[in-house]
Amino acid sequence: MKHDQSTFDRRTVLRTAAVLSAGLAGCLNGSTETGDGTTTPNDDSDEQGILRQVAVEGTELGVELGSVADVDRVNLIQPNGELFGTREVAAGVQQVSFEIGTAYDPGEYRILAVQNGETAAETSLEIRPQLEIVDVGLFRNNPDKPWDEVYGESETNRVKNSEAYVEVRNMGNGPDAVVELRFSGDVPHLAEHYEGSGLHGIDHIVVPPEERTNLFSSTFPFGPKLGDDGMGCSINENQGEFNVMIESMVTGREVTKTFRVTYSGSEEMRDCDIDISVT
Image 1 (cartoon, rainbow, N blue to C red):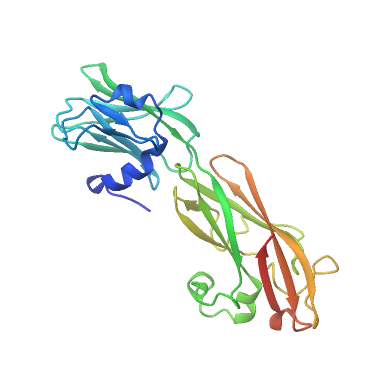
Image 2: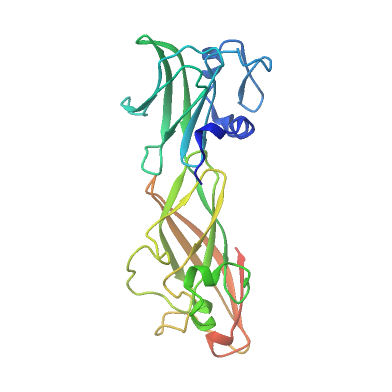
C-alpha cells in the first residue's frame, strides 16, 4: 500500500510510533514520552522540536518535521552504521519519507536532521517485521474470497476446491514479504517437489506492518489424494493435522502453524466436507 508524502497521516504516525526508542524524548525539544512509548510534544503547537514524529507506514519510513525546523536534509542511518539514504529538505517542507521496501535489514535506524553540515537533531527507531499465520480456508467454505480474480473465471470449482488461501498478518512495525508457502502433514495432495514459491502466479507478496494479507496456494494441497502419503476423505470421518509454513523475505525465517482437519461425507475429495480449526 503506497502512501503519498503529502498526505502523511498524523493519526497513523501517532499510532505506529509506539516503538520509538526512549532516546527520542531527549532529542525532541519540549517533548513528553507517554505511557505507551509514544513521544509527542507537550502541546499542540507545531513549533515544538525539529523531529516531531517518525514511523513506518506501508513500505515507507516517514519523518515529520516541526514547522519552524530549519534543516538542509534528513539522513537515515542503517543498523550497521552505513547511510541508507538522504532527503533534501526544501524551505517550508515538513514531511520527508524513505522507501525501505522489503530488502532492508531489521534493527535500529537513526534519523538525523542536518543543518549546515552539523546534526541539529537525532532520534532512532527499531524497525522489525513479525509475520504470523492466522487462518487457512477453502473455496467450498469461503466462496466470498476473490477466487475467480486469483485463479481466473475459466477455472472449474474442482480446481479451486483443490487450492487454499492462508491469511497472514504482520504484527511488527516494519514491512515484510512472504516468499514461500508450503503445506505438510495430513493434506490429501502432498507435493513431492515444490517448484517456485507455492504462491499462485507470483513469487512474493508484500505484507505491510499492522496489516493482514491472503496468500493463495499453487500446489493443490486439497486436491485428489496423491499416492499413499496424503490423507483422503471418508464417508465416516478422517481426522488429522497439517502444517502451514511461510518464509519471510526480510528475516529469512520460517513461520509455521498447525491446524486440525476433519474429512467426511464422501470417498471423493471433490465432494468432501472439510473442517479446519487451529490446534
